Image (tube, rainbow, N blue to C red):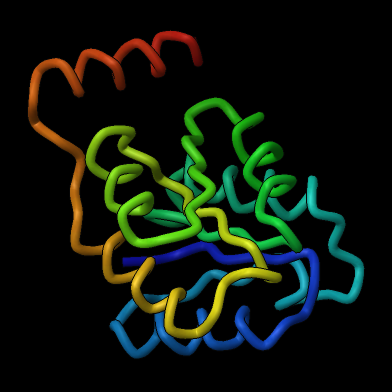
Length: 145
């Protein structure tokens, strides 16, 4: 699976995330500070989201200090469903009930241990097949039209 990943800041947890994705067999498509010194959070969020929506990446991961800004920017792109996740249960729910295609995390609060738990939850869950959940996702997609 190809994962677009970006951040507006260079941080140890960003490097750990890239290494962890590669260890799991994912191809990493870098954005933001992984490529350049100038990486405003709105640009990073939108570039990662565009890569996902256009099919250049299967899913995306974005980071900023709190995770809020990049998630807001990513969600401006039609077809992006970015979820700010602070823990594994939130990540699992975002994938199951929201069919989230972009994981947003905080550089400040995400420890290496929590990162691994969040990634485990994210990648081990798929969108729900329950009709009620599917109806909600369809509703979101209709709003993108």
